[in-house]
Length: 207
Ligand SMILES: Cc1cc2nc3c(=O)[nH]c(=O)nc-3n(C[C@H](O)[C@H](O)[C@H](O)COP(=O)(O)O)c2cc1C
Image 1 (cartoon, rainbow, N blue to C red):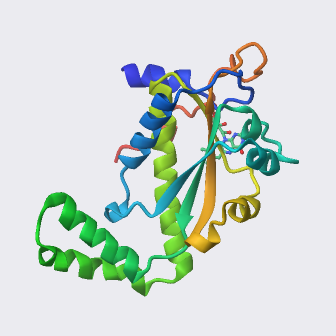
Image 2 (image 1 turned 90 degrees about the vertical axis):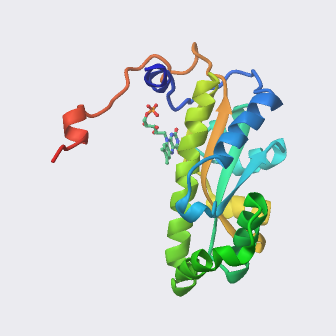
């Protein structure tokens, strides 16, 4: 029930106050992203916390999203452009180390992950982007639990961000942004608007 109240409290903020999110709270949001579910547990994305105000200015130039420059922090979710044998090897070793088991015990799982190597980079990128969006949802809810406001944003120049952060060299592409901070209740026209949602019966079908 508490969670429903929290979900009703949150909204996509347009106008932020100057209040800063503490590093302690930022770390909690990052940890929630890290705990997010992902297909095969591969976490095929990375999170960038953009603190550099010049970078934010460049990214926010000519954007319809002032939140890119005006919020406390800006998070960028970037998904891997492909799945490589190295990524699979690294993941398998990480599981073996974390769970203190012989790596051979994971042979069957490793073979199953070979499935990704038979797909096109485009297919793998669609898949990795979806995983990044699940992480976005986790971050958004985690922030709301801390009474921290957010705005998920697809309205940004992804190519520009990729260049600014050198993402292509890392095998990554940016997919979605999340600004975090505290709403300016007085100045944000969206702050008091009623939530627009479907009737539950339209959304969900019981068969
Ligand atoms: C993937 C995604 C992309 C979005 N992109 C933007 C955006 O670029 N700018 C913006 O102001 N809001 C953006 N939104 C916010 C939505 O417009 C908002 O979540 C929706 O209208 C529902 O309202 P609420 O979140 O305030 O309840 C985005 C939301 C999602 C989930």
